[in-house]
Structures are given as C-alpha cells and as structure tokens.
Image (spheres, rainbow, N blue to C red):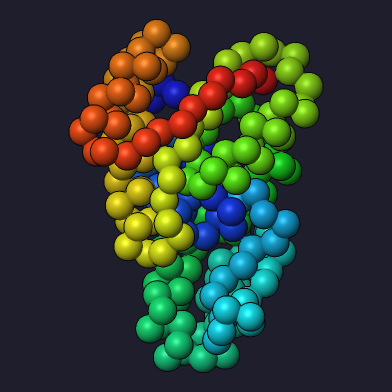
Length: 193
C-alpha cells in the first residue's frame, strides 16, 4: 500500500461505502465519510426521510428500520446496504470532523457539492505539513445500481494511482486515460495538509 484513500459522499451510506467496501476488500488503506449535516436515508416518502446523526451505528439504523417496515426497507435495498455498511465499519463519519484520523493522499468524492465541501474544509484547515492531497470527483447518482458502478470505477482509478510512485507526476495521464476508457468526466484539484 502506497497511498491512503478517503471516499466521501453526502451521508456516508451508499456511494462512499460501496467504494470503501471494494477498496478495503482489495487491501487498500481506505476510510470513508459524509459531508452533510445529518445522515439521511429514504423513508416511506420523499418528505419523510429517516434522519440520523453522524456516529449513529449502522446496526442501530438497521434494527430500527427493520422494526419500522421490513418490507419497504428490504424492497428499496436499504437493509442490504446497511448490512454491508456494518460489516465495513461501526458508523457513518463526517468529513469535517475527521482531522484526528490522520492524513490522506487521495480523496474521492461522488458529487460536485461534496467535492466543493471537501475542498472548502481543507482550505479552512491549518496546513502545517504542506503535504499535497489529491481531491477527485467522479459524479455518481445516489442509487444502488450507480453506486455499484461508481465503486468499481473508484477502485480501478485508485489501483491505477496506487501503481505509480507518485501521483503528482502521472495524474494528468491517469485522468485522460480514465476519461477516454469510461467516457466519464473526472474533476480534480490539489490541496494541502
């Protein structure tokens, strides 16, 4: 393992956790986070989401939703998603509260507003190390099917980065090759710790 990775979406439930699961399974050093103010999961209607605080264990969410309406949450894939999540880590974590988790080399986001939030947070932190960090965005719709595709693409991209001595010298070629092969646009920026 050459680099340390962070996968980030809004609620640290679907897109970031699918990527976290896949990278971890391949032996990469990975963590995951959300940038929202709360963790939101679909409820009986769009106006009735299930809202949790970051740090609420996935097991607690799973048990609560299974009690509320097991058929609904099985049918919409939420119970299966939470089961995967609780096998990866204890609870969703918030990016803005992660300073104690150490330094990452690469941060992958899955939505433009999350990318912007991560960059804003990094720019507002003290940067005593002046260590570079690559922040990339791969736009992925927040549904189970797209999260599965996005997770595989994130894994492929991170494995490509991992195969290089330093990403700074090769990132333009890596991005160009990825975009050409997958016909998906990547946005990236460089920040500092």
